[in-house]
Length: 321
Image (tube, rainbow, N blue to C red; front, top):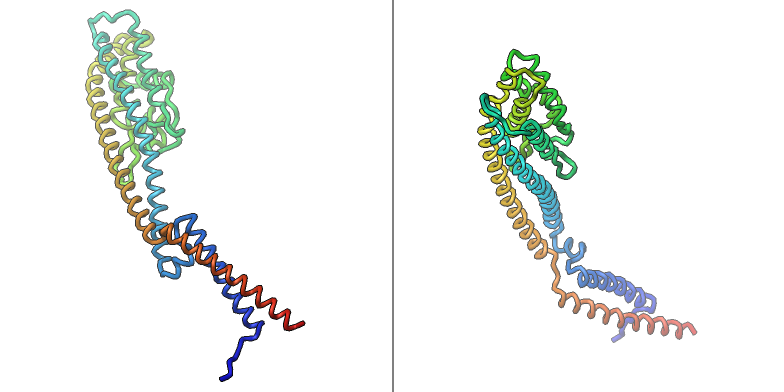
């Protein structure tokens, strides 16, 4: 029987093709050993590429949602502190309003204290989070409040009105001077992922009524307006202060519930991300010991091929000579 042997050139070409194949396999095995993940070639070969792309899209969406919740959490935390400070000022207003009533002798410095309450309230409402006013709702462009400008606007509106109550109501009415000057383009609320409102803006009744009470209280001690207007302002402040306190407590409770919803959403997203990571690991994960064994095997096979290629080259050269 005659044995057909491959010519040296064909044998060498076969060895070189095998060498290229093993080199690619070795590179993939080394990559798997370093990253702990299968390569795209392995995944595609296993018909799992579409599933991996779907998981990747879900993980990106999860990342985006988590980033949104992180921003909301920071904003809500800042607003909770803001409302706590506002609540303290409302308590100060309630106490001072008692001394502003007719036939009551106010303590010395009441006028300065009333102006200080208004200024403190405005400073709290100008609090920012992430470069945005906390009280701006979903709007970024929100004009900062000014205690002096706000008081001047209210006095001008009241002076043009038939009486104090009408003037102070017009100041804070929808589309009125307050909204036009300070709250323009500031929506009522921001929303969480489920569309639930949680951020209190300048148009929130509790905040408007707190400002309205603070202005009424400041005007109750203002000697530049008529005694009749001061009396009306004192009565307005005394009447609205308890309501403002109640509304502020309700608003703080709303923010607390919003924080609870946010924590629930964050827990859900964290759990979802863990599930996605486990699915991805099951799809592309690699056993380190198995990857190390493959690397050693491919290195050994390549070393053998190098020897065979060298010997084939030597034989070819010897035959030529």
